[in-house]
Image 1 (tube, one colour):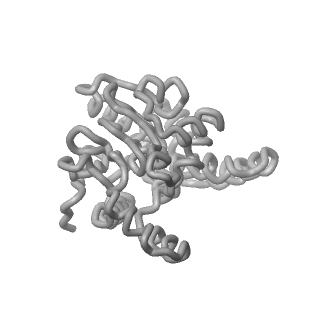
Image 2 (image 1 turned 60 degrees about the vertical axis):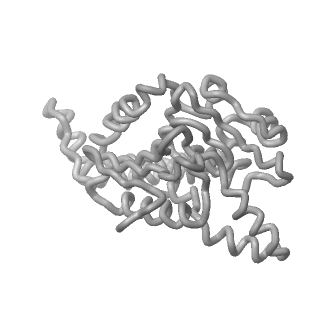
Image 3 (image 1 turned 90 degrees about the vertical axis):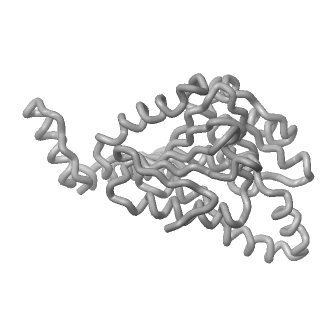
Length: 262
């Protein structure tokens, strides 16, 4: 498929999706939303892709939504029509539901929707120059693609409320300190670090990784005892897979396992 607003690449089991509107700091609009949805589905359904990395071209990861689009939504008057418009846009939840691990390689500004996309990824590796923020309050609105809910769960109520009600950005080191990102690296080493991290996931059993995500994202929403039962159910199902048999046999035979994703 031909894309204008994103770039898709496949590199040794890594599917790389790059926002490609650098002249406007990769601002999120309807066209980018459509291509992001289609591009992500393309990588998620490609058996040769084991890990998906999302990043931005130029100086920004994604510096928020196109204000003209937001202004257009505000003129719909009826909140139900606004919800219908939002329902036609990219859903960051797709990344959490995808059984493949996802990594946000945050190369610059990640504001608004950019921060929301990054938070929906399983892992976030940040360049030193990156900044994170949910600045919607500064134009009289709130996050609309999961910003309040994911930020709360990642950094806690106090810091999430501060970031959302002030709209002030934080730098990469503060993002690391509060648990918003996994690690911070020099700008020039970002892709090397992302590739190195992704390579640690590529050779793992894809079935088990998908189940790990399900246990965390779905089980994590359950009360503890229910979550424990859910985990044991997932464990029992995973133990019956071909990958589990291969993994245990490889351990006993003192060799590297050859997982097939079955």
